[in-house]
Amino acid sequence: MRETAYTYDGTFEGLISVIFEIYSTKQQPLEIKQQKNYTPPLFGETFHVISDSVRANRVIKKIKALDKRFFGQLFRVFLSEKEDREMLIFRSIELLLTKPAAVKGDYRNPNLLRVKQINKEISREVHRMHAFVRFQRLADDIWFAAIEPDFDVMPLIGNHFEKRYADQKWVIYDVKRKYGLHYDLHQMEFIELNLDNSLNAEKLSSDLLHIDEMEYQQLWKEYFDSVNIKARKNMKLHIQQVPKRYWKYLFEK
Image (cartoon, rainbow, N blue to C red; front, side, top):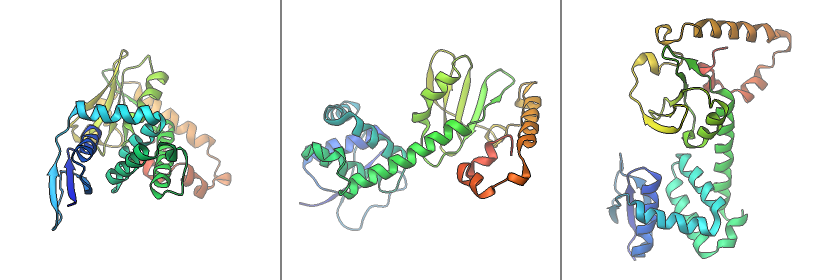
């Protein structure tokens, strides 16, 4: 049986459509990659699969019927953007379909162990987003926060902020991935934004901010400085708890 390299549009639905195609044609995938910037292998065929919501939903329904929790873990693997995520998800689904009980915790299997490890990384990043997101009040009374997470965790953090800030209009914008979440007091939705430099900066320019925002940020910084006892400062521990990559989005820094 000749191995085939599969490409897709980069969406989760697109990846699941590839997996449907693989099982329908009984082919063995050489690799599965996003079509964007893909370099075909020297040997073997390359086949691009068009995203198909009907086919993808059939696969998703089957996976959830066997193990809904495991489906959630695989979705998080996809959001990790790891180089090997597509084949890892395929191999994990393959195992689920042949030996459903094995995915309950057989970490002797290297694929399952990797799924567990990636989920741990994702959970840690989600927790940090909950803690380190800093909103700035704009002149039009919308609260704006820029983030730059290691992984694409935006789909995992929205519910937390919707519950916590249900009485405010807000936007959380992923600087790296150029999209965000918008909440308008009624519903959340994903939005694509092409922001200019004034909005794309770590901290917004003063002319975009609400009249009270600059004063608030200064008061917060003064408070932070006042409780920061230099004699007890443990920079190594501080960096472990608040990695430096988050500092540029924290007003107190």
